[in-house]
Image 1 (cartoon, rainbow, N blue to C red):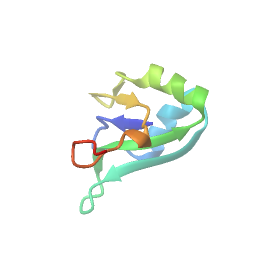
Image 2: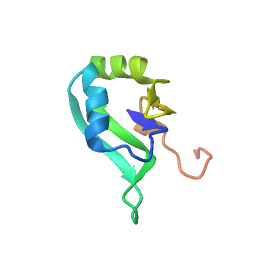
Image 3: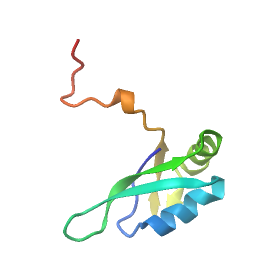
Image 4: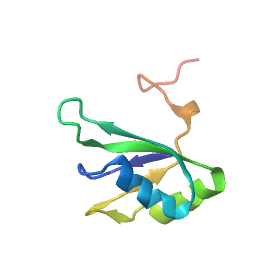
Length: 87
């Protein structure tokens, strides 16, 4: 799942704690600034299918440290670079 609008104070530990309410968290990757090591505001969380669906419905729009999370499924097939699909 793609998680955006994470606060700068977000860490793997507190994101894991938040998502573990909905099931087993397989992995977490939080994008951090290379110099400050603070969260850049987004990351990825991996969970089982039914648990992930529960997490999306339960956490999307929920306040986390003063910011409203955006949680959605990440579809690697839809990633495009350059803005336009080529045939």
